[in-house]
Image 1 (cartoon, each protein chain N blue to C red):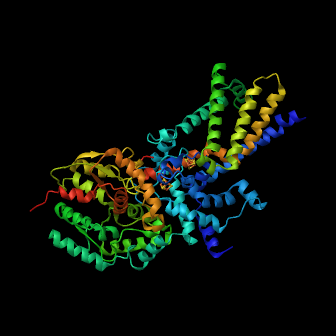
Image 2: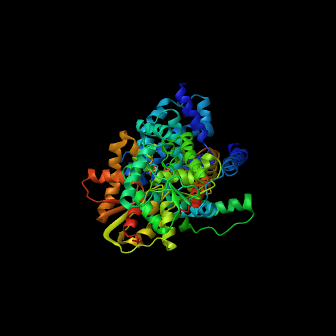
Image 3: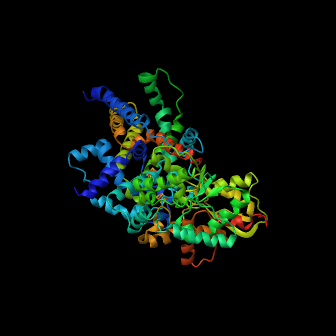
Length: 213
Length: 420
Ligand code: SF4
Ligand code: SF4
């Protein structure tokens, strides 16, 4: 009964919430009419926007030594998670069967282990930094902690679910993913999408002033 | 709800645009922006974290635009917005932020934090939570025409001195001139050498220019306090002056925020483009140098560095020009470790220097500049903003550092080739 619910209606419900939430949020940002800047531009807003979307993947040279921990842990977590999400064999199979109709070569088992270690360690360091560093402790909210915990649970149950013989573990993973998907559009997890318009807005602003940002 | 709270809240609500929505929903609270802010690095007080300074606007956004915020408000689970939300942030925003925009260069998700802080100022100013010093400056600017209370009479007196020293006529109210020069009050009172530099360079380069008796003040206290109405009113005077004299260009002086106001914000406050061009004095000097109209001979041998005024360089885009000019007249020009678009502020921008309450904090923040200077061991500092210059002079004196500061236009004029 519960199994049918998790694999059936609740799964579709979470997908609907996830996609409609993202479309709504992103639509209200991307399609909102922004004011036209009437000052005479010195450079191109469009190329500034495009550049900044990419340049902010790297930290400023002078800043890097002061934020080394966040950079390393941030990259470990995001790259690890990306690899797990799109290159773990069960995920590829799932996407092929349910959505895409085609698959690609999964990463080997040793790469899976490294990716999970990166993702777990990265997330843990970031979360410890969040609660121990006076700055991030002051500015963090309940939402940040809930998002971290949910992500952790999804990853943990995902690793456990690899022991495919236990349906209960696979179901637990599915269920945690569903909670994650439902929470996503209402939380800061949205940064996974909104970072693009944010960087673009800033890049455009600086770009028309002829400043690389 | 009190009147001032309502005014503040309504103004904050009106500040929430698409950019703000995108920025707030992207912030991952990583705290990286703190490391870019001199008020945090020099005090280690987490309250000076840039994004923390935007809390009042964040709270309004959360309550009115987010799912959880709306639910919390409906169920009475979130504390409602109070005057304390404004009062407690006045010091953080006005004393602890020079609007330098360095935080906006480092945020991994691309948030222009300074853009949001500027909007918070609007809310605070509307609710009368602004420091006395800035309120007074804005009032003087509106009533007298200058934040320092400088009247035309005082300018004319300074002009007389300059004319006597140079033997040159300072043109006033010349209709149809190519360029109308603006000045900051600080230049008029503290650094009239700037007026002299303009007169000598323009005479030599054959530039047709003028001052305007009805619009000589370039600074804009409305921008500093965060009151767009005052900002617009002050700007309109400049525009009226330029239109009356039918000039083709307006020159923004060696003043950071004046450039931001006139060059970039102005047309947006007015709601229409200008019918003249705005150039920064360094842009014009660089053009004159390149075209051969400005000739210099000899070079300064002292080891010197350039302090980039934030609003001219990082947020204004005039980065290469001062370097071209310096290289043409200085043999020993060295850069600070973080320079150009990543330069550290002097600590007194954004109205901080006009706010006496912030004096101690401003001097603390200056320690960042001190550390940069200590690394270089220079004999002279060159800059292009009268406010930076005064703030740094104060900081150097406080730290018993004997380094002279000079404006870039003045340095150039020392090596100007002049007809005898
Ligand atoms: S650096 Fe950007 S994402 Fe991080 S706390 Fe500051 S504003 Fe937020
Ligand atoms: S604008 Fe400058 S002073 Fe203000 S918060 Fe950002 S880095 Fe700090």
